[in-house]
Length: 160
Image 1 (cartoon, rainbow, N blue to C red):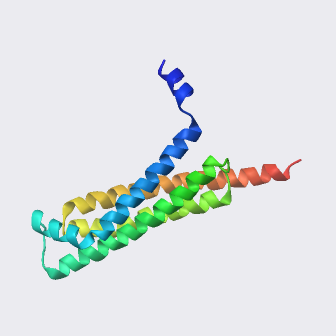
Image 2 (cartoon, rainbow, N blue to C red):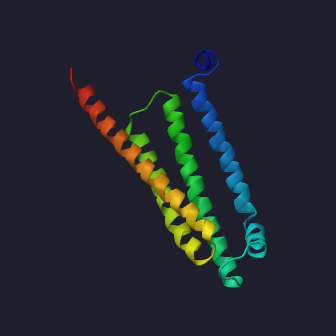
């Protein structure tokens, strides 16, 4: 019954379009958070019990926030392009492998930034770092599968 409803009112194309809109929305939220960076850092330092504090810690958290925002926006941009190509039917193409590689690197770098900050300043950052590193691992596996599929597709395209 549920599958009939899904097939009748929803499709893979609509799902990809919906996901693209979500990516755009998350990009807007990320940009808004970056714009409110100093205010968010002040709130974090006031409202939470940080392991260390002081003006240098606030500046470091602000730099970390902007670095993570830049990585997130670059990742979302690549994800948006990836989804756009999927919507157009270009699945196993080298551009998708490149996009997945970039997304994986963004997750890896964000994890590398957040993990030590979590242990030094505020523990929840360590959990964010672990989540980002885990996502990097998943994306790298998917990227490898896509790269193999692109190679197989290229070989098949050459076969007559």
